[in-house]
Length: 188
Image 1 (tube, rainbow, N blue to C red):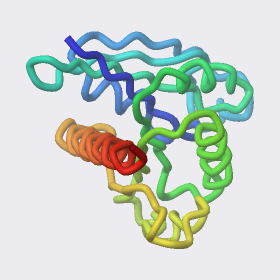
Image 2: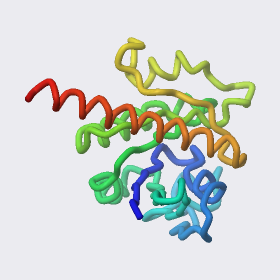
Image 3: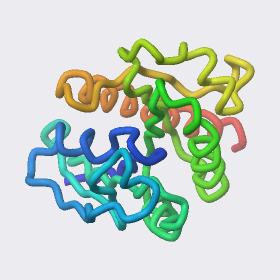
Image 4: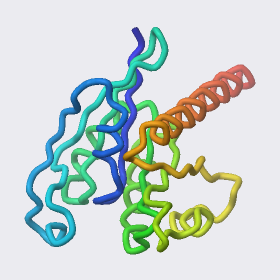
């Protein structure tokens, strides 16, 4: 059985824990605790270490899903979780432009540590205040379509939406693996 480790990351309130709870086949493990800082004014609990879920993906592949805390003070967990990941999803709340800078910092942190496939999941895209995907891409530093990762709308409460995001990430991972094999063949 092959195990593929997927990290779900993003700013506080983007839907990481909900994403994992929605798709996990096991009872997810979480480290949610009562929020005690400025986050407590809009969110009762926050992840302080990680979330963990599992999803069987085909007969021989299991996905292990690791959700990071959203707060930068827990970035040591970001580092631990991303180091052995095969791919990651950056969840961004489409309706909270004040979080785009934090999302960009998380993205830079992850990209500095690993070169693995990823996609951007746009949560809360149904909110009337949601920004268009193109504007969010620019806010994250992707001015050109050439180097932009896939961006998908995702409703973290909807199992089909979360599954579609996971399928897109697996497709992105498979393409990345094929490109790596082709590149290795060219070098030799």
